[in-house]
Length: 143
Image (cartoon, rainbow, N blue to C red; front, side):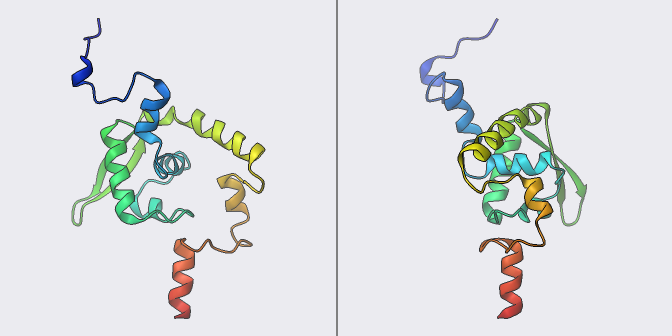
């Protein structure tokens, strides 16, 4: 039997499943981190090198939040300096269906939208986005 939580002790805005899910992963970056983990990225360096150019302070925050929510797990693979590998939990892997629905919707309703795999196959022919690691590296070589 579930314990009843009084409204005063419940931090949720409502009992709505959509509202509660958005509170966990509805920001600009969390689902992109989940996407990258689903595609095999594991380390902080791999995650920060995503094409969207997530700022390092935001990535660190999202990793902590996702781990706190039980969506990802971390395991140290190096002691000095400490480095962690990140994996999706069962709860996190279940978000794959949500991401697939977003892919289908985006491809149907947003012209020019491609999947991460399509982007990777065109990687050599595409110009880097302004905030991407490739663009920053190119700017530093030019400057």
